[in-house]
Image (cartoon, rainbow, N blue to C red; front, side, top):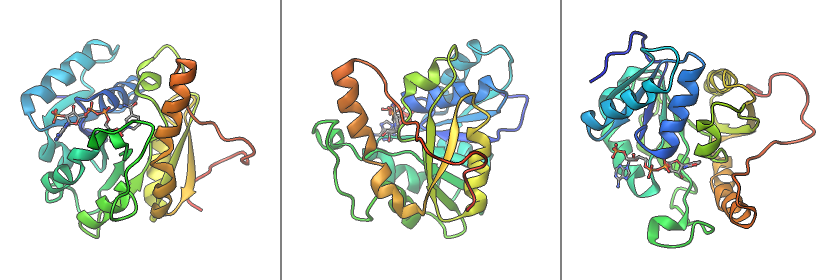
Length: 235
Ligand SMILES: NC(=O)c1ccc[n+]([C@@H]2O[C@H](COP(=O)([O-])OP(=O)(O)OC[C@H]3O[C@@H](n4cnc5c(N)ncnc54)[C@H](OP(=O)(O)O)[C@@H]3O)[C@@H](O)[C@H]2O)c1
């Protein structure tokens, strides 16, 4: 286990993976202390050490097992494949702080069932984020965000993010807290797209983006036009 010199502001469950690792790297690059979670504490420590090597400032990334990471920060990003979604929620639910903000980025792509990444599967709750809502204690604030940002975009520290982060949720304070975190990343803009149930429309967007990526051999993202200037969350 690596001991970060700073208290984590954010934990990333599944931070050993492609997206979670890239988000941890990008956040730590702007001074945010991050705890990486894994089913295996040793794997988390190794992933944290690898990220630390890419950072100018040491001591910002720590690795823990998933429950320890879940209890270590007030913002907990959940970044695991759909097949692992419910099991992971069950593994961390008791460890979360009572008023934790859980940010779910799950895209319900058909790859979870051996299908194509350009298709999605239907979920009984309407969306993965709503499944998370049902699985977690009522005091925990659940948001859905980050679905449309590719790990490659986050991991390329030479370029600003330059994309919108679409945030769904029912708690205005939680959305503001996530927006403040998002906007620490250069070029990232937080956009409040409404209640948690709007995740039903945001979660499938990666299937669309993947189809475009395949045609143009790139990693596209989303930047909305026509929005007013100024803070876009908390309405
Ligand atoms: N990749 C992207 O660009 C991107 C973009 C937007 C949204 N997303 C979403 O982000 C989430 C993670 O994507 P990813 O590409 O980072 O996934 P990934 O690398 O395949 O997996 C992330 C982590 O989840 C854990 N995990 C994997 N399979 C598991 C299983 N069967 N049971 C329990 N834990 C398991 C692993 O951590 P440990 O083995 O260390 O526990 C793994 O490192 C997905 O829901 C995806 O839809 C991804």
